[in-house]
Image (tube, rainbow, N blue to C red; front, top):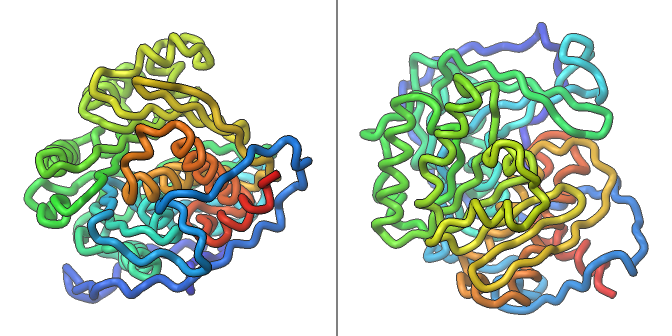
Length: 393
């Protein structure tokens, strides 16, 4: 399966548009073929330090094949789809990087592909440029068995680009090219409402709230999904450089906070939203728990995650790996969580089974950081179950 990843020098980037029609017809996606993720970057922690993982419930079948696609468990992801340019060497500035590997990305699209890789049913709604990168991204979704019927192409704007600086510890800093990019220009009239209304879960971030007309399209899509009975899943995915100011980012992210049923945040986002309060203090986190929320998740990188519901809360340890590139780790975690909630929403009411689901999600994130790029590194269901079975004590 082609992942469209290649190393290239910065000054050799080409963005020539394709000469095909304004809206090239996209055929229905084919069924996904099993994909094996190399995990050579794993360290070998002591089995004593790893949590026990029980395979139970229909969300985590233990047969040898992938579960059949269930359209009643469709997860529709809304937002940006772009190209990440990841340096081939870590610990250097963008100016110092000798070359870059192009990798498809964009948080909502990452989640859609992640769910499909895990055997789930997913669709993506968003806009790209009518250019080579835009068509490439549409093809990648199709090849990964993501429904791309909700994608739109803009003849007057480019597909968004992001250049990623990798520190030696694998953490990232971003430089975005959006002036404006096509994803910012999606209009409410371009929404595939029939597809949205089929969603069991509707997932989105906050980047699509920054500018019009995409903000209005976002709000209309979320309302249509909610009215149709979907679970709303929200990962703010804070990217401060994209917002006019820190205050506008805080207000924008919180403006739709109380409409979400499931929210995933990290420690930095907690500090930002609470204006500097301790993200490890449960009482601080509880301030972000609104009355209608079903699940609040806090990711902590290699340390794992915390979970909060109205009835219970706790922590699930992560898997220790050698991080190469943390791009997409949070999205892989979200994909792992939503792929299971979509097939069995009762997980939210059973703490033991929810903890097992979150161990699965933690493993998805851990596997993703062992390779460069987001979508290219997202693991298959088989790879995740394999590493978890090795972790059972």
